[in-house]
Length: 270
Image (cartoon, rainbow, N blue to C red; front, side, top):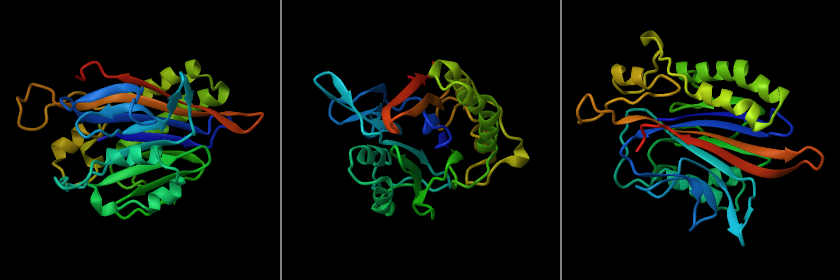
């Protein structure tokens, strides 16, 4: 079901630090992080629907990569409403934004919200970040600060969002402030993304799914679990990919010089 944390405009040389866990059925066919040959996108790819859950704009010209600073992430919205077969893939919203020339706000305002199952979409470039969903949250610019979003409303305080927020403030953001070199802080970020502590039953959100399922989904990192109609001892769902996205800005010229994704696949994901 996924979780995303965004440190937006907190650090002069790193205006964006985005951490993401992608939770998905293990059998869903997926390509790992790569440069797409058919679109100017650097991302993993959902081979079932053709879109992605997280990516940046990047294209290759004669072996040289060019970027424009655009980035995007999408999460499902969990409210007990099943996706319809006639609805468009939510991953298309990420690819369409990354290949669009519209500003983040203009793109968000032009989404046909009724065409998709429930989603939270976060899109941005070097200067603006916007969040929107089709469950009543209008396109809204992100203020400078730390934002943690999962599968409810952006302002919801779920156990997993507050646990991730707290650990980032204590264990990761101080490291970035001290030294923003990736090798100095990214392992700590991945460690925080790998938190498997589940919520006490009394702190579970009410989203329309069974309490037992809600409990399994309540940790930042979801260990492999059997969902659906398969054998109960065969894992079918869990956190499949962990990613960190950054925008790096040249402090002397105040221009963004590189967008980068660091991603790792979980060992049990097929």
